[in-house]
Amino acid sequence: MATETSGVAVAQPTDVGLKRELGLVGATWASETSIIGSGWLFGALYAAQAVGGAAVLAWAIAGVVVIVLALTYAELGAMYPVSGGTARFPHFAFGSVAGVGFGYISYLQAVTIAPVECFAFMQYASYYWHGIYNTNTHVVTGSGFVFTIVLMAVFTAVNFLAMRIFARVNNVITWWKVAIPVLAIIVLLFKFHGGNFTAGGAGFMPGGLKALFGALPAAGIIFAYSGFEQADQLAGEIKNPGRNLPRAIIISVLLGTLVYCLLQVVFIGAMPASQLTHGFAHITDANILAGPFAGLAGVVGLGWLATILRVDAFISPSGTGLIYVTGTSRVSYGLARNRYYPQIFGRTSAAGVPWVGILFAFLFGLFFLLPFPSWHSLVGLITAASVLMYAGAPLALGAFRGQVPEADRPYRLPGAAVLAPVAFIVANLLIYWSGFEVIWKLGVVLVIGYVLIGISMASDKQRPPLDWKSAQWLPVWLIGLGIISWLGQYSGGAVAAPVNTGTIPFWWDMVVVAAFSLVIYYWAMATKVPKEEMLDLVGRQAAPTAPTAAG
Image 1 (tube, rainbow, N blue to C red):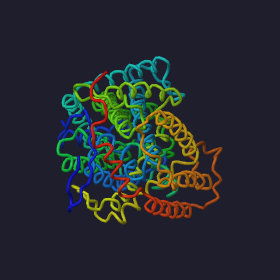
Image 2: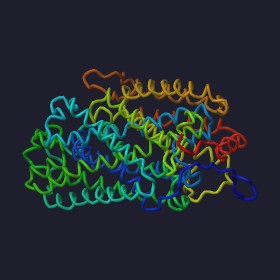
Image 3: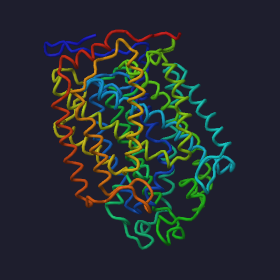
Image 4: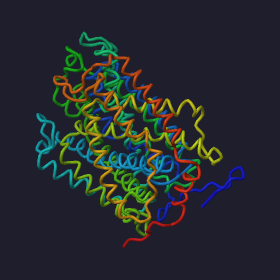
């Protein structure tokens, strides 16, 4: 398929076997249900523990950061409305060598979210069923692990429904998921105490700006915003994607930012003074620590609200886990279209469901349950994986602007020449703030991904060419970030035994990250694949080469 733009034929990738059955509301709620998951249940507590009253600023800063990144996805998704877009845009822009890294990280980020949401479910459910979660070690028990597997199986089963039916189920769940936090905000405002923002003698921002920036990844704030890209992951199934997809992404992020900021305000304002004698870092109430908002509602005498919130704590993570199984299967579908994954991942049922990808999302999700037995321990790795994935969007946007300036762009990011490199800097700062311990682990995972995908591609005679030249900046970027992180101020691990050296002073570390990011960005722009090769990569996915029926 190709479109004529300014007299130039521009190829368009075409998904095969999927059905365009999502409207604006369905696409918006696909992203919104991903954003409002377990993050709102725990993020407010962890953020307040990290930076006290300044946690509100952390949510606002993160909201601005995510909006900048989301706008790049809005242009990319409307330009090339294909499923699993986060795994495919870098492939088109920089070829297979760079594309493999971003594609694998996209899959890693998607496949680990459902297990995280299951753990959040278990942590809240332990209020009624004590045997599934150990509040002392903060891990699920054996019975909790079994129940988590059952919950993952339910997510998988629902995903076999046709998209139009699945969207109806998701819409109902998401309306509930948005309504309950709004209800909590309204009710808890009546318990508001402005003095709480400086309670405990530590002031408004204990730990200063260094702690504030570190809280963005460490407290699960960036993780909580993860999911706005779900509309891009399902772009191959959205009706009128040029109009509906950008709107879905922008609306979902703006709504999520408003809800999260207000939730943090009321969480801080409604906390009883008895819990803040030594500040938010020393809250002792077991119910608040196990289930922050429900526990808070119970402590301030709102038992009915606590009950509703505990019910929502089952529904909210479940809705997010459900949509991420969907998104994972679409990413693996996209990787098959790139010919990184075996072509079996491109198989769809008669209902337009990539059923092989759904089954493997379940199996790989179980794998990630094993080494990370709690919500908090997974968040750091997933946040870094998310932001590494997000870094691919401004790179791809900048590359496409140079390669195919004549291509149709239903949504065009204003000031992209400035905002694209700024978005890349922001993504790198978020990776840096995750800390060296998280970054080196992510590096190991990425190497494993290259090995696995390399084995898969080696046996595929139709694999795309290896564009080494266009990826020459990639290892320098990844290794350079690791070195800067090692020399920088953020460990990402135990405070008592940090693995980083702290050689680069605070503030200068961020200047170094920003300068390094600009070098990498413009290096990537200079070595992107030529226009003809880029169009060839797109054209390879324009023909219906993927299998379309269940075998």
